[in-house]
Structure formats: structure tokens, C-alpha cells
Image 1 (cartoon, protein in one colour):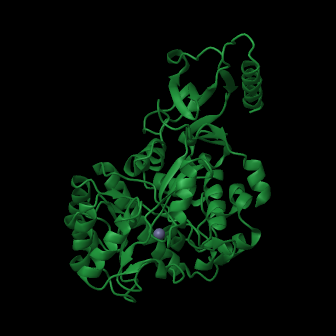
Image 2 (tube, helix red, strand yellow; image 1 turned 30 degrees about the vertical axis):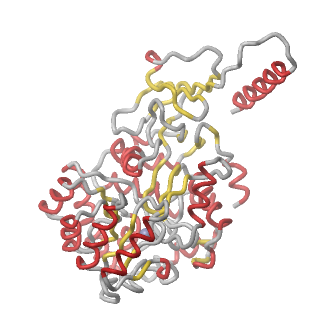
Image 3 (tube, helix red, strand yellow; image 1 turned 135 degrees about the vertical axis):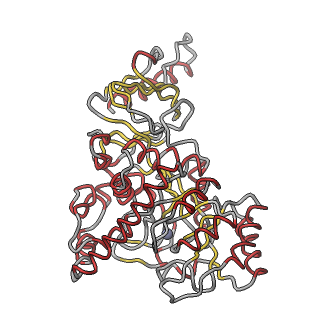
Length: 451
Ligand SMILES: [Zn+2]
């Protein structure tokens, strides 16, 4: 990275010379060529050994095997031999503004907290995060706009503004629940759709769940008109679901995406086929459910990357959440989680559009970190590491419509430099050497010292 610095200095000197009215000089190239790394492009294909990635002004201008890429004259060369490069992750399901260390409270919903969280996502190599339906007011839109103009950095924030549920029946966490619009009639529901469509929301979120019988579930009488009204306004609808029956009816009603797998039964072939046929995108959202199968703290709690951004007190609390689990409860959790993995494999084999959605930003579900664990669980389902990476990069970028998530010409130069190759063990995505967003290396060391 010293070379990048040197190139900036040369560019500055060149600029001064030009201003002083001296003889016109060859402009110093702003191009940087990253050589020698194994490239995982994010398209699900095999990795390219000894690849070259050429970046200019924050955009990938060329990528491929060394023999097929011509490095422009004057380019700064960065040697990444021994490293692996892949696109930064795109997570379509998170929640910003609620967590501040041990505290999980809507009082934390401030610009300062949110921008810090976007730095946390970026630190872990998440380049884009969609906050899914829990953003009151216009704070998230302001941050998104400031990122677009370059005033703010961090992972790019997208938002579904406030989602819709039955009254007091939205998000599971009580502190998040008031952010959802509560609809009791079709008229109210459509009014909320209009309100959401009047913002720059990327999606419309609905919650279709009775929370173990404790709340009234949003039914087809309301979500039917919601989906119709949203589609009339070019807004796609993502549903939080739990039951297979609701999933079937939502697909029939034209839903665009699911924020979870069904969790009551294994998905049958008919449901899988309907999802594929209607091109409904599905976020596996595995890591939250996976907790239920452990009677002891799982290995991810001890990974050094976790401790880099999270306080020891939070890690202790996560560890303690596994205490007092009975073997019976863990056995039941194991059974139901295995069922989810089987559903996921079925969806994958059938060609369903799978996209990363990790639900990070709820209490002790660590932003940036748990996205990586989600990848590990996708691979546990029997999906290849190459495809798991596609699910976490180019596939969600395509659904969201953002120009990232792929090492390809014309894409934003958002990429991760890893110390190990995740093709040989997906947890290597956590061995992060550097993160580049729009061609700029993130100063991870200073972020680490801040935390
Ligand atoms: Zn969520």
C-alpha cells in the first residue's frame, strides 16, 4: 500500500508542475494493477490462479488471467502473490441503529451509531447492507445520500424504510417493533404502501408471522393488496416468514423475496418449484436459527476476528446465552436446523435465486462478522464454496441493482484481500488482509483502535 501512497504523491507533484505552466508532461497514470492473487470473481465459476485486477478511479477496468490482461503503461503495480481476492459481500438483510455494545435499544438510533455500524460492516468486508424495514424517519436516506456524494464512507446503506405488519406484530424484538407500520384494514395498508413508495426505499418489508401465537399474523386479505399496490409503484416486497403455508400463499400473491427459509417443515418440491418458477429470491438467514442446536458456545465465538470489533462483555454475554441449554433442546434445535439445511439444498439444486441475508444488527448478532458465519452454514448445507460466495456477492447485488459484488469490467472496485483461499475452507473469508471500497483501501487499523 506504500506504492499507492507514492503514486498519489507523484500525481500531486505532476499537478503542481502543470499549474506552474511548465512544459506539458505525460499525466501520471491513476491505474493500479493488483497482480499475483487467486481471483474469485463472484460469478460462481472456478478461481483464477495468478490473476490480475486492474482498477482506475474506483472502477474495475480489467480482470483475468495474467496472459489475458494488458496492464496499461505507468500503472502502479501491487503484488498480491499468495493472497486471494474476492468481491466484498452484499447483505440484503440487516438492521442498523439499534445496537451499541451491550445496549439494544431504539434510543441508539442516531446518525453517529449508524455510521459507526457501517464502518463495522465495511471492516469485515461487507460492502453493501440493506436495513430491512426498521428505519424510522429519514436518517437512513440522509446517510445513503451522503455516501453517494462521498461525504460518508463505510458499507453502502440501503433501506426498506419502515415495513408493514398487523399492529404491534412486526419485528420480533420489542424495541424494534414500533418501527413497523401497523395495518388493520386494506385502506390503511395501501396508505402505508403509498407512504413507503414516496421515499427512496429499496424494498417494502412485511412480517407474516404470529410469533408463536402471541400476535396477529398479517394475512392474504392485507398482504394481497399490499403487494399489488407496491408493484403498481415499482416497489418489490420482501416477506419475513415462518410457515410453509404462508410461503406458498405469498408466492401465489406475487411476493418478490423471502427474508427467511420456512422454519416449521422442510420445503416440499411443490413449494420449491413455485419459488423457482416465480423467481422469488430467498435469503437463507441460517445463523440465527443455528444457535438453537448448540448446547455449548460454538467455535465462531472464539474466532480472533470477532474480538477485533466486539467488546469482551458482549462476547461473554454471547457465551452465556448457551448456558443452561438442555441436551433435549439442543437435539430438537439440531433436528429443525438440519431441516432448514435440507430445504436450502433443495432450493439450490432447483436453481432458486439465493441471496445473502444474515439479519445482523439484532442483539448479539454481530454486524459484519455473522455474514461470514452465514457463508459457512450455506456450505454446510452442501453448496459449493464458489456458489456460496456468489450467493453473498453477485447474486444479491443483482437483486438490489447495485454495480458491485463481481470482479468484472465496469464494476465498482469493492473487494476483499484474503490471507487464505476460501475454496479450500470457506471460513477463510474471515482471514481478511485488506478491504477495498471503490478502489480505496479501508484503514482497518485505525477502525480497530477506535473499537
Ligand atoms: Zn430482520
